[in-house]
Image 1 (cartoon, rainbow, N blue to C red):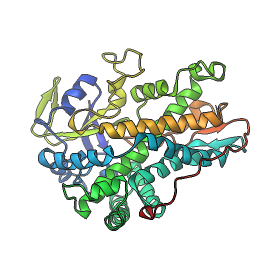
Image 2 (cartoon, rainbow, N blue to C red; image 1 turned 180 degrees about the vertical axis):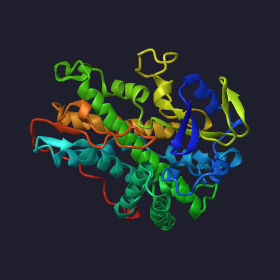
Image 3 (cartoon, rainbow, N blue to C red; image 1 turned 135 degrees about the vertical axis):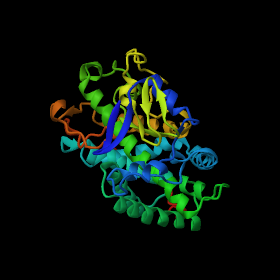
Image 4 (cartoon, rainbow, N blue to C red; image 1 turned 90 degrees about the vertical axis):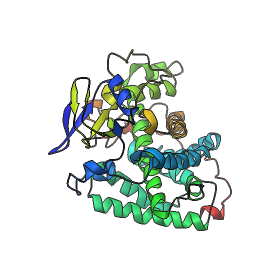
Length: 377
């Protein structure tokens, strides 16, 4: 269907599941590189940081895509999921302790966002002062803040991180990227890390919040069912299908004019997949979500989210929710669900806040972190 990706900027939105899978898997007719389109629109579009060309796997084709994708996959493959579980626990419990005695909290501002931020920084190997700059820039990126300002913030912070990792390597994603045999330049490093951060903060944050919202509003997970409710993984599987953290994305560009399902797609005009619409289409959605492998929350085709990133994200989400509910099992929404506010933006599906109440609880014992390593300074 024809839409505007921004006022006055036409695009096509794909809302059919099988059509989306066909398009996203067709590198011959559709390109991930937006540069020909980008040259025809104002450079200062507020959404440009989310869609502009970058030298990374998401925005490249052919040999360059293979090069960047191999570096990213290998860097992510070094993430130990068993260790990651402990990392989430160590980040979660101090945050829960900070509000458990008050009886109320905004879970996004006081728990979800800081937890994801701390965990991702540890995985990437980023010290807090650099990570804070990146977090601010990543949020601005999704909100459609000034393009030059966002890119300058990201470039400054991620070049500093790259320099640090070249001088002080460690067992982390950034080090594995700088040491990868493909030989990424400092500029290329910035753009690989932009992808890691933008996906690694926004997607788990929205996935945790949206999954918790389901569990707090659906009778299957209410207090009377405690002990008999479906596991957190069932809620996560359902949200990936029915309310994914990115509602619309996976942008490609027809290499030449082409007709798909009787719709004319002009050359180089953005074709955007609505994962939310495709997932809920009657031709694919049976209402059974547990363990589903068909949802498009992670994309499809050669530019889909790497499997290693999916596994890590889902583990972070599940562990974050389980840690919270273990300590505060009687969580309730503080306002009717219909009064919750959603952040504006054409791509994400993100709450502004998730206010909850609960019986005040005593702080829990926190597992001490592993010994300090100077390589992580």
